[in-house]
Length: 254
Length: 254
Picture 1 (cartoon, each protein chain N blue to C red):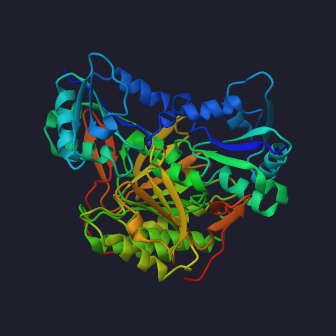
Picture 2: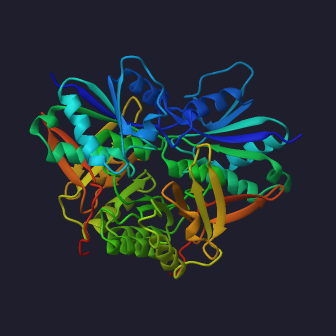
Picture 3: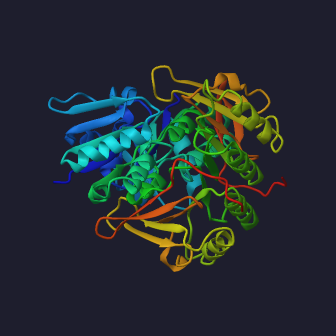
């Protein structure tokens, strides 16, 4: 009596960014599992069971979800943003691959969502309008040397760079190191965006430069976008600032 | 009598992936502008004017949209996927920066959408579950040497790589060169996904490997995802194949 499991992207926060497919999947599920603040965004439905958890227990949560699905439930694992980008989908597939063999028979689907980086970019213009890299700065699950190697590669390739998980109480110095590394490759006037809690009540978007970017202004809910050599800051109207990366590009010597 | 302009992401095709904010913005606009096949996805509303165009006229279309907005209209520029990723948003801001100075007073907003890469990834599992790069293979607006440099950097950084615009009649050999370059850095069994027309009627998703990837199977509507050294192909149930990149990673020598 194997059930189903859907890993559902809620988008970054606002209800107006949840797709109809995600809303419908959440409404159909018998059981919802997720980090408690994400679960709280989903409308209550009578008869539906909810399992809220701590943010750090991704694999535990994934196993719990698979266990419920194998018993016949239709389980929705809720994820902020898109579930495939530094979120729950990888954890579920890892649990599936390494866990009970019966879990491999569960029908698992991923319901995509609007990822936070797309909303952060939209708020300031179109900084991701050309080739870009997306890097998690967290060294909880990968060695810091790999992060450094990827930052070097992204800088060498003159990519726009999106940083997820830039800072936390347990990882206070990594963002400063990352910004200094990139500043060795790029002009100090390169636009940098600190996007805090995008599309949520306490959203705050700051446009700064590589010279003035202060790591203290970032935490686990901040997403950072660093321009390439082509990224432009344009002043429009009364002090409105737009950041965009043009569609055309030239080869700039590193 | 300056109007407004919204650059709206329709998602990759299916109506169930259009956000409520996008649907509402499209319904409120007085004038819709876009590539004709994208415009055709938007429900008709009486009194609304529509301007369909060819796909190559991005800057012309952007200027037309700004011209209408400055005359007092509420213009929606429609874009497939997310408007900020290799789509219309950059063209609009470029037109705004370089065009008539009155255009800078127009209130321009970007309404994000689910980008095609997120849906392509969702179809096969979670290949974008760890650090990744997004590169347009088109050398219409950038020198091929810059594309090569970015591919080299992405390979050196062991990033998962997403390729937009991999191939067209006018650009038949670039994808083969790109795949050969990456094959010099990665195992021949590395998973490669060819995602054609995601979430549209003729969607076709092929999972292959770097060894067997055939450029002939790609065109302008194909998106390609190439795994990192960590990306895994897992066989589940009856010949169902899942591709995911684990949340943890090790430093692999290039």
